[in-house]
Length: 336
Image (cartoon, rainbow, N blue to C red; front, side):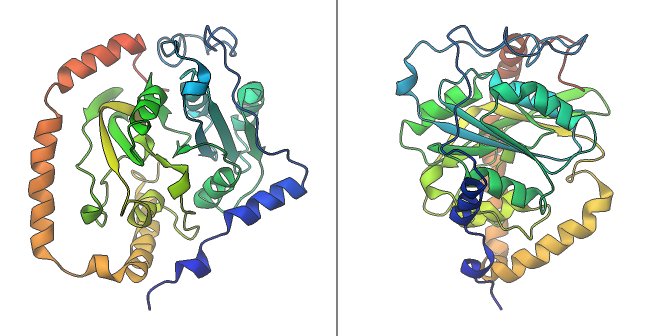
């Protein structure tokens, strides 16, 4: 039988009331903003780290802060101490004037708690306690959110310079679902490469990998809770419910970077059973999407092939510009 989401999705307002009952003051404070940026005030980077987001920051804002919409970023984290500091700095060094940044750690026992404590003065809220998994942690974070634009960034991914500025500028033009291109960082080979996003349309939401989660943002008024039973296909299932009816806009620039490593859910063979379980749940929850439609499969492949060729035009020039903005050379590309 089809899943009734009214019965299985959590009530984020209830989560918010629980936080308030425990004494948390709402709304949360914004990330401190300085006209000269946060780079000089943040903890010094580890020895040997150069470029973005260690020794460089996003170009500073000239327009008054009130001209920009509030943006809320949630970072769920668990045992990702090797990457977490890079994630935090990539959000904070956006130097976005109206930023709410929430970190939900599921009780890590590595260096993550120490990193979070070091950066706590610049965070809107940070929790280090057991949770019921990644989707639950993200829901807890968004239950506290007060922004007009939402995004979440997994702790082993990071934003690129100017990402939030580009998102805010696009949101001002009436967009409700904003997605950009991305970088893929190969941990084992110490290489990164540019990936142009697919053409996103509600017609194609059943196809995995439609948009890169680490480069996607949406209007807070349209937000829906994540399905907490999902373990791997969390963003995929959310897009199925969220995208239809929204005004989508693509940004032809990499907004975020995803790191490929052996422990990530996408590239860890041990996660295959979890992916399969999610697929079964999605099939039961969205049966109409999974009906065989060979003509739609063909259409999708043709549309994305054309979109990919179109969007990759000028990619080499964008990569060169991005490398300059990030201050990266061959010895300082984004690797942990």
